[in-house]
Length: 278
Image 1 (cartoon, helix red, strand yellow):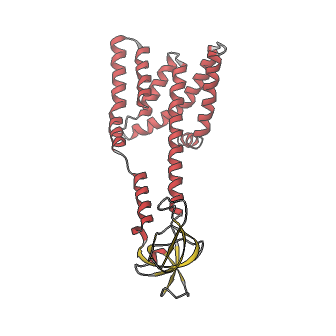
Image 2 (tube, rainbow, N blue to C red):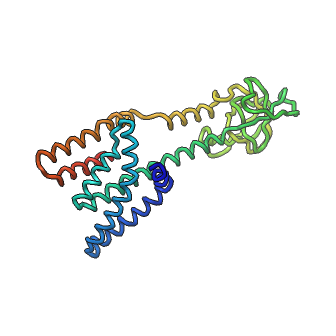
Image 3 (cartoon, one colour):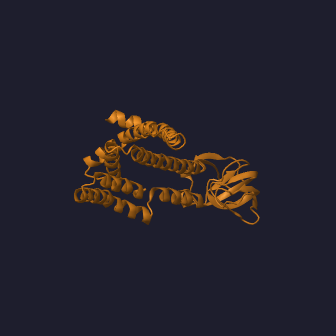
């Protein structure tokens, strides 16, 4: 089972693309050519293919005594296949796995953006003894203390928040302020500079006022990472709601099936429960 789980996890996108092709072909055959028999086979194939990873996830969740949405979908799809509702079985599994692929792609894009932002943070700096000293020593940014003097040359990043004590130049501050055009700053006005900004021309010496995580750029990174890791109030509500949703839908479908003696109606409730959950 573990091997099968890894296969579906590693090939989820390819599998969903294949399922999408099958669903599109089934719809075309059903409504354009009236070949319902063939379209049912295609829907059934989609349902069976999508059912395998859902059952695996449902079993794994049950091992931890969690009644997951995958269990609800699995029961609904199996029931639909048994009573011959192949289109419902195929569409439900396709929509569920398609949603997972979209969610995975969104998360991957978010993580990539955070990684790119992290890579903008300066790693080293050139420290000097005084504003006029040019015998610079390359040091790690973690070794910089407040009030240290740092030499920044054309094309280099400013490693700390601070003020210019020597020289002048144009600074690209888009990574911090969002301003598209470089701003001219100089020692004459004791202008402030920010970590993560780029000196597009000139040479300056900066006296550090904030270093590391205390810089504006450091706080931006911290906020972005916290936002990515944390859950909103709506997400927390959905998580709590999900623990009870699947058992309730299963129970309602069971009661309806017993009272009405209509298996098709009970399975329809399960399918609707899957769709409403999305």
